[in-house]
Image 1 (cartoon, one colour):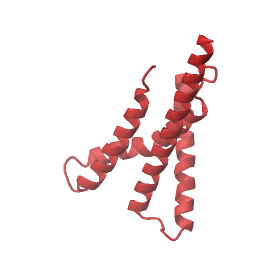
Image 2 (tube, one colour; image 1 turned 90 degrees about the horizontal axis):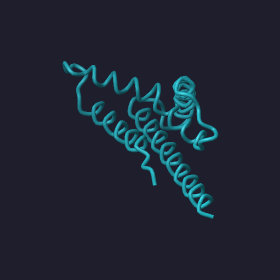
Image 3 (cartoon, helix red, strand yellow; image 1 turned 180 degrees about the horizontal axis):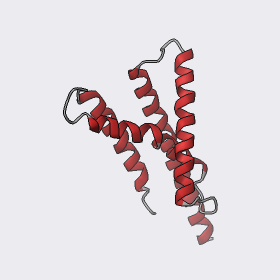
Image 4 (cartoon, helix red, strand yellow; image 1 turned 120 degrees about the vertical axis):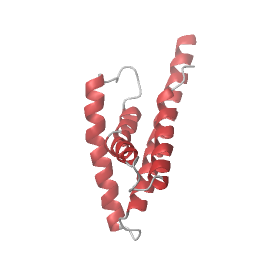
Length: 130
């Protein structure tokens, strides 16, 4: 069975982003790493996970450019809706709640997409054997 490397990359990117944000101070000369990882994490990763969840089959595959554009657009939507829910919840909007909720959303979407792809791959494999 083909390994899905994108899932490991998403989990690693999420862990690195959280580590860099919490352990590199803002006045450090390498603080630009926080900005780079944070920008990618907010603008691409949530939407990319949702695109992988929605378009898991080979028949529904998107082009590279379509996948990137849809990932960015969906990321802004996911971040906006999560900010809305945080603002309406008793937790409130602060940097920690945004970071943790966005990391949780990314990991849940990525895990769901990974499981869906595995189930579809097993079904396709058993259909070819029958």
